Length: 123
Image (cartoon, rainbow, N blue to C red):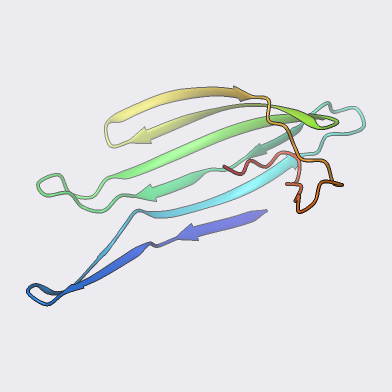
């Protein structure tokens, strides 16, 4: 299991306005790959639910976004195929997402290449 969290903070200083600080979107998540490719199962399957707390906007208050994804990934040598979908909710808006991709993974012998673990996406 992989736990993530981020709290971005921006601070600026101007001689005429003084010092000002503000936070960005606070994000928390937990990735869990619960099925590994191999044996009788043809793909890695994982989920990475996240909660994002957006900063308040004048007149609108603070919004919270929830993402509940499910991803399946299958490696074929230097290629892998990913299919993922997610349910999301933000305030009164809700929806479903579906994506697919065929990223090329670098060969382990390439100079400076770092191979990402199967079933994990780095963008």
